[in-house]
Length: 241
Image (cartoon, rainbow, N blue to C red; front, side, top):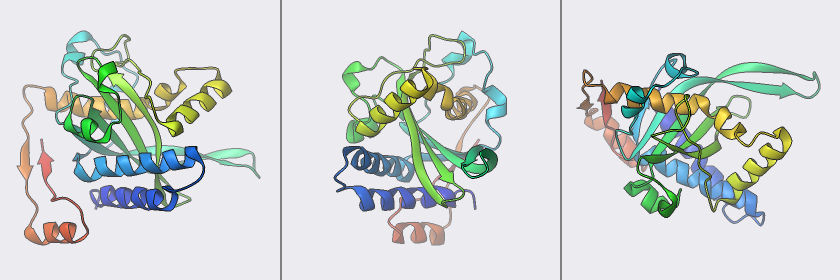
């Protein structure tokens, strides 16, 4: 049941792309292109589900030894997890915290996925850098949508475990970053907003990087894979650890 959410998210993002890819507004058109890029990552990346992931690492001090194990296990990974969304009611002038889902995406900047999609300029990267993006299911609108994307580093400069880099050449993210920075006065606001996604990726990398953890590929039955291929999706390969 959980893994079907990946396909739902990819489908919604592709629909967003098809609806707005030729829009006259550069920001909306850039958002559409980013939606298609994230859909590609979800379809072709390795899929994981981690329940209640943020309670493990988020907000904790990350020592150098732990950072060593926080390396992406694959070129592109997508991690489904629970999260909460604050919905603001203009009439009531208050907000509700609603449980929902997010998919955190991480891409190796030197990997084939980034070379193919061009999410981050390779000539500006350092060894170990990668991109993290976030896709959220909006409960009231009943649709998956992209939120933010930032470049971060394996070998960070601070205790919480990452060094932020600016994503270049994307009108949508440039616009969002400028708007948020001007409204909050905090140039690091986006990275703080994405701490949940960063913790999700770091948790997975840490678990898979430990010496006492082994993975095994579980190939679903032929019927499931036939259904996925009929929908235009890639073959299902689940990884247990």
